[in-house]
Amino acid sequence: MKAHLMQSPEIAEAFEEAHPNKVQISRYLQRDGFPVYKDTDVTYYPLGDNMETDFMKDLAAAKESIFMEYFIVYNGEWWKRIREILVKKASEGVDVRLLVDDFGCLYMGVRKLKRELKKDGIKLYSFAPLEQRVESLSFNYRNHQKITIIDSTVAYTGGINLADEYINQLDRFGHWKDSAIRMEGAAVYSLTASFLAMWQHTSRRQEDIGQFTPRWETKGTGFVQPFSGGPHRNPNNPICGVYSRLINKARDYVYITTPYLVLDYHLRDQLVQAVESGVDVRIITPHRYDKWYVYMVTVSNYGKLLEKGVRIYEYTPGFIHAKNVVVDDECGVCGTINLDYRSLYLHHENGVFLADDKAVLEIKRDFQETLKLCEEIRYDQWKKRPIRQRLVQGVLKVLSPLL
Image (cartoon, rainbow, N blue to C red; front, side, top):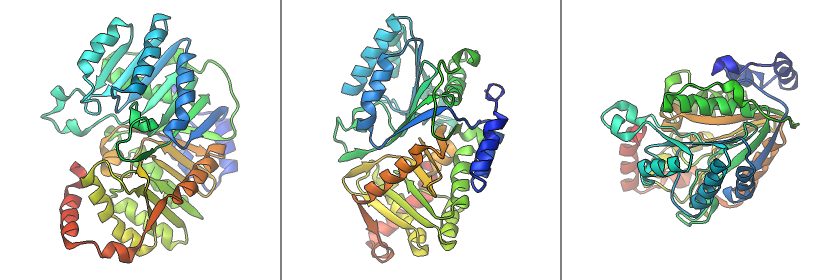
């Protein structure tokens, strides 16, 4: 898709003038084929509940195409309402496509759903079918991206999958705290390219991306740079590279929200070095977990960070699934990226790098408001963990790349 994603020299120059300290992050993504755009309106949603109304309204307004790509789609009230809209739109001649991860939708009955949707005129493919991968190491390479694109001009991405708990219509682990962004305008073209790359790989059908350019123009407040990556990009994976550069370029603060904290030594040391340089580094993780073994590894990773001055908080009302980072009131990322081994090295992920946009300060404000609902973890408290818990965490930490 790189041949279709051309960088405007004027916009690249404008970014450099506005952010001489952060321009290396944008250049890094440009070099990997991801242009930076203006003329894109961005709305940030601090909860899936906040996103739902706009999301459903945009789906219902589709005239030409609806592209959806998700790790998890689960039968429930929300999916039922979404499916009704998709069926109606397909009957009106809208090009409706759904790409799901075969492992993430294990309990969905993807084969049956595909047959049903085909009758309704909806195309569905599942990424990396399990029966073809179960004996291969590539079984671990999952599609964790979460993208909806409407009429090539409006797009949603972030941590939210298509299941009831993501909009708090189902209580699984207490209050579900997630986040997402809505984009309208020029930058949607890059998300369309990411979707079509995965669609072509899965369906084995070529597409002319040129027919899916944004249909109308909008104005935005800043710079917007969607990007994606996966195991095919290792060891130079933009998913890891963006986080690394954001941490290294921070001058005042780095605020991170992640459901899992399973760091390699490289990122851990960069966070420590940021603190040692006087940067305020704070991380929010869940107090109520969805996977006990991953939570055990997350807690085991607190030690070195706490000892060196990284401040860690656990969200107490429920499970926090948001994946955000914001730096210095200047830039940030909202996307699908967890700070764990799977997201950084094994999964196909996507995110949006934002600078000068109103959404950056909205992400910061959301972080600060969320802190009020968190319990700060102290180093002396962490050291007093029961011996049995330490032993379990030690074993699981060794196995963490497999979890």
